[in-house]
Length: 90
Image 1: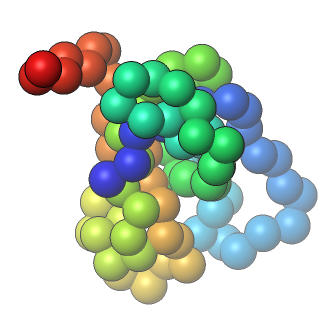
Image 2: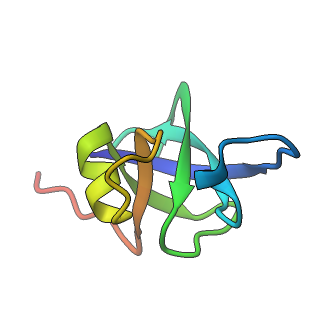
């Protein structure tokens, strides 16, 4: 699982049929304190996340296909939750 912040969407006119009518999000990775790490990834949105929201991303192909109920889909990452708060034990 990866913590991230939605920084935008990707739009394409030519793609694999699996991606028709699916939203692709640009996710900037964050650490548990909410600081950007400088890394990013692209993920399929399964929860209706929007720009600026902190999200939880499953970045493992087989798990992503199970979440999306698409066993043959060419997908690796999927947004599985919108984060309301992060409480760190100190």
